[in-house]
Amino acid sequence: MTEKNIEKGTQSGGFHYAYAIVASCIAITFLPCALVLSCAGIFFTPVSQYFGVATAEFTLYFSVLNIAQMLTLPVAGKLLSRLDARVVLSAAVVLCAAGLAGMSLCQAMWQFYVCGAVLGVGVCPLIYLSVPTLVNAWCVKRVGFFVGLCMAFTGIGGVVFNPVGTALINSGAEGWRTAYLVFAAIVAVGTLPFTLLVVRSRPEDKGLLPYGAGEAAGDAGTEAEVTGVPAAQAMRMPAFFALAAFCGVITLNQTIYQFLAGYAQSFADTMPAIAAASGIVASAAMGGQAVGKVVLGAVNDRSVHAGVVLGIGAGVAGVTLMWLFPGALALLLVGAFLFGVVYAMTTVQTPLLVRTVFGSADYTNIYSRVSMVGSLMSAVAAVLWGLVVDSAGGYPLMFVLGYGCMAACLVLALFSLKARPHVA
Image (tube, rainbow, N blue to C red; front, side):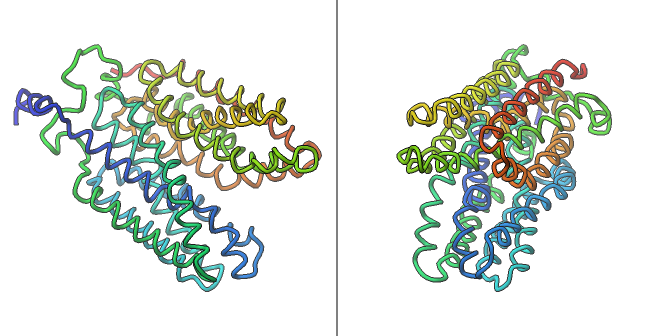
């Protein structure tokens, strides 16, 4: 097919196949990513109580999961850049379904750890690589918006499926086994049709040009789609190390979210109404994350610098409101919501920064290595913040360190943008 015919096929009918790719990415984040990651917490207490072990002994599987993700990322990046995306992503979905089904059959803690490793290998390319890789390949405009929209469904999936899983868990003494099995079936049945039948690695596979390629040559982002720095060269540049550090620190900062409910509950003696609203505080942050991903994506389409400043600014404002006005529930909820916006930077701002700095020629391999730092941090961040909260400094120290994390992220992001190489 000639280039002229390809472009004609891209524009005809008002529907671009890129929309089907975006729908597939939404299915990936809404189902396997949400069910494996966003819904993990509902199992912690019932499974621990069933086996009569400390919660930490069971939740160790989640640390195994994160370590497995870190080790898998460079391999997954190479596979996704060289093989058909349908094969890589479908295999990943199967591993997620198998891991969840395996969790339903476990009879000992070590078996959960094995299943955690399987889940980590499976969810790794889905949560970190699938959305930015496919959207970058299929779109040269509105890239940020589409990435943000797709990633928002990890939180939306948690909102939808956490109540479903909780109901299944409460259905009987071993309801948690049923919940894991149902989640496994949902992952397989709901996602494989998209990864097997809809996903294509690049527009050329359908005889098309990327979405927006037929528009003005000066459209923002077009150049980054056809140029870029090879991974071997990028990984020797200061901008790469800055982005890797950004990914790790923003992940560390994100994990403060897990302690917001505990922060509200810490006022049980002085402000019982605030403590009773701890679940709402956590939900407000989750809502801010979902909205923040879409907003940050749209802002990044106009200016990556503005996206960085908006995300960090929202986080600083959120922490300030939560720390200084804990007794005003409305302000506490607004603060939690705003913190959700900086939380969203982890999976939206990071890939968009990598794309802006290094282009798209070897994007998957570069981003997979940057993400390794974030995945490693995920394995230890909750423990680190737990130590901080339990120390003499308590929650105030957590917030002060949060300010430090966000300030460092602002500096690292702006440095990486200033130090980005000029690609031809």
